[in-house]
Image 1 (tube, one colour):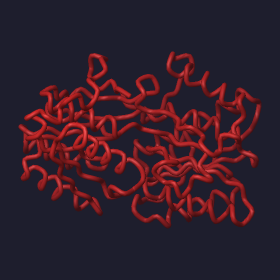
Image 2 (cartoon, rainbow, N blue to C red):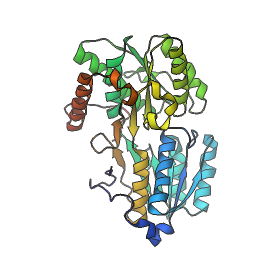
Image 3 (cartoon, rainbow, N blue to C red):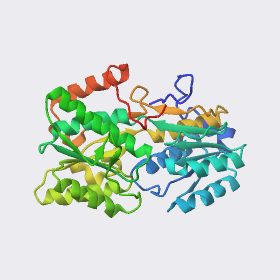
Image 4 (cartoon, rainbow, N blue to C red):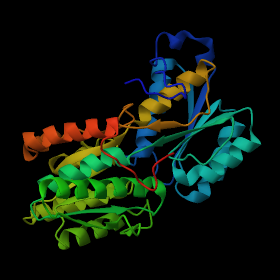
Length: 348
């Protein structure tokens, strides 16, 4: 889908359209730097990376990549991109903000785009952020609806805004379900009021996701939403093991459609809270190739298709037609403003 990436609200040109023969594209070097989760995190790094690869395929640009294994790699990786003369460098994640700001300041003729951060105000940096609370609200509602134990859970990798925005939306969706249905489904792992909850304090140690998920399951949660990049795989492993032991626990993925990016967990995947990062990356590259780079922040919402709730795929039968109809109405309500979804971490 075409994303509204410019401040004027017009949809940018669709990628492709003969750009492979464009001399500007052939001489354009698009670069991407991951955060410590790496490009194979089956989450937001991977989605962004695939967007850059799509730009290579559709537009005919050249590409350079640098994968970070820890935060110590951020500055050297960005220096490497600048030395290579990257026309546009995409940095993936809030944690890269400081390094990206410094690189942009030191290289004012080069362009940058940063995923999941809106703190950098510079003419050569385009922030790409998502109001994921909107789609997570829908995920919380449907999770509460399918829960048989009356308890659902969530946890984060690190307590940062791009993580807690999911948890806020999820919590509010559970609350909304209780209000509308007269139920009392409990949320484990997050308190919206105190902004405190369960965190692994890492995006790198997958086993920490397994530990926290096992704890949530032992407390009674039968739907779990990890917001922790690669640790989602740890959560999925814990749920698969629990279900082999007789439990009936479901998983909610984040960032990408886990049914496609993490097929190991198809059998337990209820839905995913999607950020369309790949499409955003390719469109930003296209704009830059065409000489239309714009530092105006892009904010993905349900309205412009930047965030969405994934299909239920193999578990669609577990979600009643009535609940699916209610979700459609909720989406309309969030878009028209009649249902307010506001997180302390929502992009402004």
